[in-house]
Length: 164
Image 1 (tube, rainbow, N blue to C red):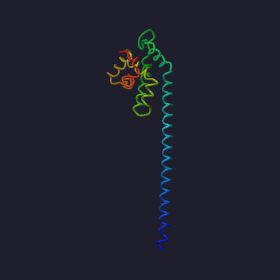
Image 2: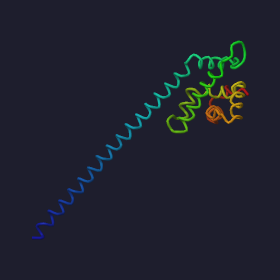
Image 3: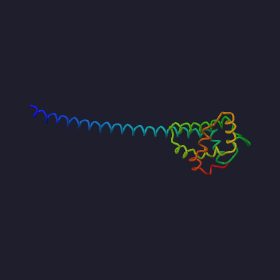
Image 4: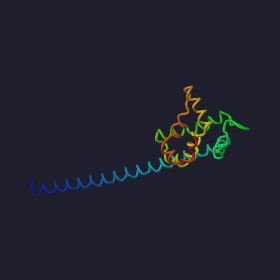
């Protein structure tokens, strides 16, 4: 009787091993698909965040600062100085970018390509630099502009923005 049962048991073991193998491949494929979907979703979210932040740069008072940076015009002095709360908004957006990079929400290279010139130019603008330093002396820091504006990758990518 054991002779009859042994081939059946061996066949059952083989079929079980094949079933486990096929199930493992299927589960691995599902996990890989889920990972790819997550990565795609993550990239879509990153793009959405960057577009929204890029949109903030087109707010009238922030755009005014950007235009003055582009044209090497005074920011806080001159005929029509920018209000400090408007400059605070601008620096706050840059601080937000820095936080997003630090927390892995945004990739530094994407921020650098889209807005790096303005960040480096801002940090190297004497008026903005002095304004940031005055806050840092009072422990009310604009760490984002300091961190990104002096970041080696940003400065290397945008050497013409360095003027101080």
